[in-house]
Length: 569
Image (cartoon, rainbow, N blue to C red; front, side, top):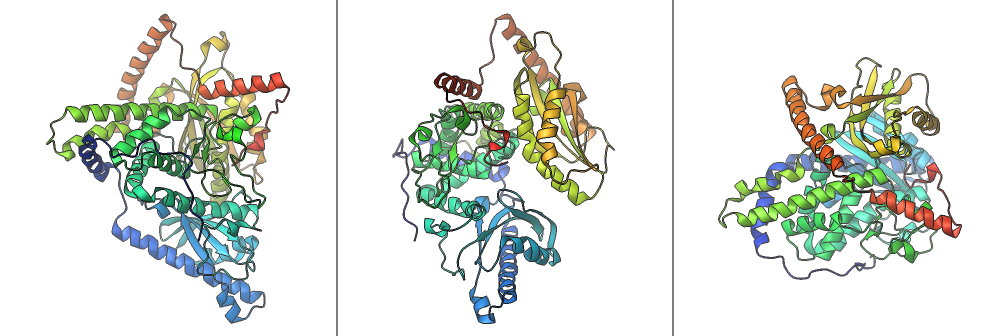
């Protein structure tokens, strides 16, 4: 049985929220029923069946590997093998169509090489498995596939045991003794998820309600993607859990408002952390074992990947938001501030309504929170990154996945140009800006805001930055060949393709009209600010990095990190 873990921070409030939030809870529940969908009971049962069949395939594979290595049928049957889930499915978020994060835990007879060889072959041969892809060289090797139309992300953990007992408790830190780094990182998912559940069990219904809204909000606002430099599932799990710790008796609407208010004003890089990190000496790096990290005081090389530290609670603690860069930081901060303002407006407007107002009417107060992002009318200049392939579709899909994980590096390289804002939109489109460039196409978009003062009348030139990105990032793809290509296109707002604005002509026309009106308002505001010498709010992350860089230079300790120093390349 794993030892109990105590929260690091003491609660801010231990009393129940004001009575007015009971009425507000009803409006939030009505809003969620309409705008925050959950899967049907039939779909949940299908997921359970899929996991049961996947477990059977995995355990049959374990036995076949054991028998092939000379073990008797009895010992092969005793070797066992466990399948664990983590993330949103394990927590019960149950979004329609969401994938299931899972990890196979195998005994020492089974190797990772065999996992990607014979188990992969068994899955490929299964009649219900489609679209299987594997990334064996990743920091956390993974297979992803659709099993009866349920997307599965499957990891592999190899324990130094002859058999995996049915009572194995992976929450025990000792389970990591003697394992390799890939196994440690694979087990991290369920271990972190289980510990988060334990830390919020006192108010789990409120935690779950706020988490579901936060995930929908992040996806609608275009900030849900860890690999693109924003926040992903585990980040939101930890942030909501932290607010749940600070307000242990909060009801859903009160907790949701506190979630936005707190992180709109959070003093980054002070970490968002649930419990004090411990180091058991098993050879893994532990985030926060040095007091300066916990205080948010870091040297330049360390701060670069710790602008918004969100620390996992299970050993070994790590920063789960290491991919955040100064430009995604600015986008995230802006969205939390927007969410905080909307929540404040909801509370004030609801207080002005009659006490007997129907919650199904008042629920629309929450609608602005999850409005679709205005990314495609927020900027005057955009970059389209077209990913192209003329050969095998599987090769293109692998290349596309690799490029998606490197786009945040393009953002960081663009940061050296005279730009005030670089906004990577994390949605992939399954076509190119110019149709017919290749047999297989996809593209991503970035919004840019030029810094006219720094440009000093010069033209904006991307050539050198693009060549560096190609040579130092794209060219690292080991299977790069003449059938694969990436092309950059610089677009004005008027030149954006119709497919980013709507699915039919009427929707596109309406989106362009709305966008033109919003842009006119923005241009008037910017012109007025220019006349009054009003400057844009500074990028707090860039300021922190500059301050740390100067301090290190003054002390003679400046160390510049390599581009491949990222925690999750």
